[in-house]
Image (cartoon, rainbow, N blue to C red; front, side, top):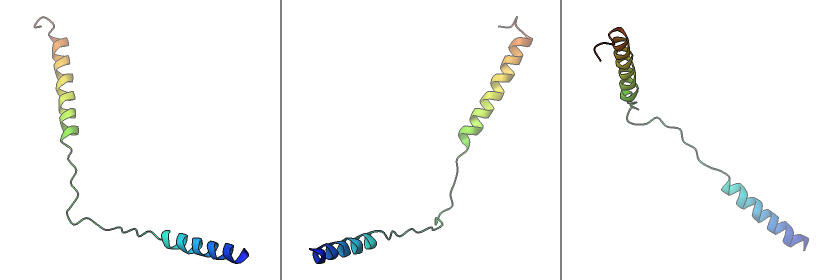
Length: 64
């Protein structure tokens, strides 16, 4: 029985060693990475317009 146990342990160890060798590649992309910032700019412009409109309403409450 010890020989069978050793054979089983050796086979399992070989299988684990072979399975635990992942390949990881770090490569730069062929096309440049583009980041679209339109959403942030739109939100910033909208916030500035809302602040300006609030100031105008507070300065001239009789218009509205």
